[in-house]
Amino acid sequence: MWSSPTTRRAPTGATPTRSLRSLLPTTRTPVPSWTFSPTIPRAPASSGSIGICIGGHLSFRAAFNPDVRAAACFYATDIHKRGLGQGMNDDSLDRVGEIRGELLMIWGRQDPHIPREGRERIHAALEDAGTRFSWLEVNGQHAFGRDEGPRYDPELARQCLGHVLDLFHRRLGQGEEETAADSGPVETRH
Image (cartoon, rainbow, N blue to C red; front, side):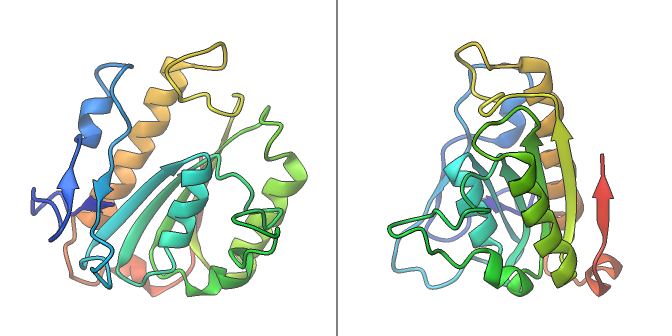
């Protein structure tokens, strides 16, 4: 989870491990995260989430919480095939209408784990529910942002993280105030 940049502090009960901004200058920085106590019932107002791979799916699900104003999901695995957890029957696509914040969905076109048909299914569900989202498909493999192995593309990863920072600045920089952008569904394609 990411706290509003205007507060410059971690949400109650959370411990920051890295600033997202620290990801941009170098390529070997760990992905940022917040560690939450399981006793905290809700995220603080003006929160965001970011997830990569299966974490992208979890970030998508974090957006069901009405306090999550922004969620960035990198190549969110298994949303299209309901594959989170045991039994291949998660309800992520069924709950898209619960999302009140804005999503940033980032995909690699050459990702064998989320084929075009799967991406189209997710896109259609977001459109049908009137969800606010940006959709970015790039020429990259699954894990193009992981800083090891042959699929890693440091420039592409840097560009995509720039989109995340833009989303968080726009949606979390407002604090708890409602913005005109909260008034209805909008999609942007990059």
